[in-house]
Length: 288
Image (cartoon, rainbow, N blue to C red; front, top):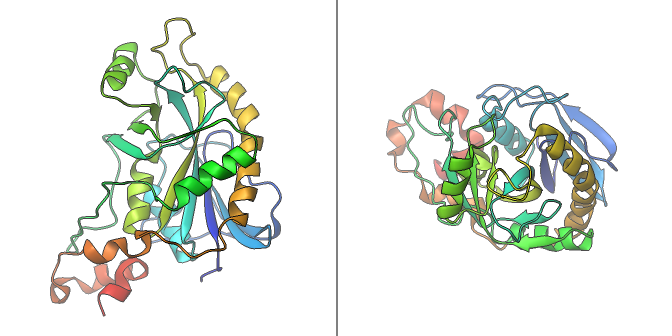
């Protein structure tokens, strides 16, 4: 079923379609983990095939806790995407990360409680290495693309994912700041970890919509505030994808593609056949 996709794009709040795609085809897939949030639209952009998925569904019907992250990532794996760029609206926990700015974080803190975090289990155990949770090859390319698209970009910073869908209390926001977090969002975990389990490069285009609720001189975050900034940033994010796709000519220099190879710990002859078949696209080449 592979489509020879160069890049998968997951659009978050405010980015529900990918402009500029030609020769499009829609994939309404079923995965072993259920259906993705929406059909994946694959089209040509700058001479390469790009896949787009609306994370929150058509019309934004899925809350962060309801998104089927495993199905979303698995679907891109089935279509052959080696890299994923995730567009995510975030709140800033730092004075110098202002609303309207973009951040490409390099660290991630999972503060969620209700989400399926792994493809593995049920007789096949894997312990994936995520000391560096974002791809060190793709992330700098994303930052450069954002800069070329005219965005104000910050490279690096720690992003914390909360369960949502509510925004933080002021006490929570201040604790996150005390922990050294730079951004707060609701969707990067477990997306980044699942992409690593699937052997895919993953980077985040985090666009800052607000100062969360910690900033004394700014109004607390509201949906209206978020939407206003999202509208301004959506065009820049889509233009950045154009610049990014032009920069993906060279092969990957990171270790993301073979990350699962060192993670599998179950003896092959003990893996249930049904689990082996289900996870064939992820680990089949390591179990031969």
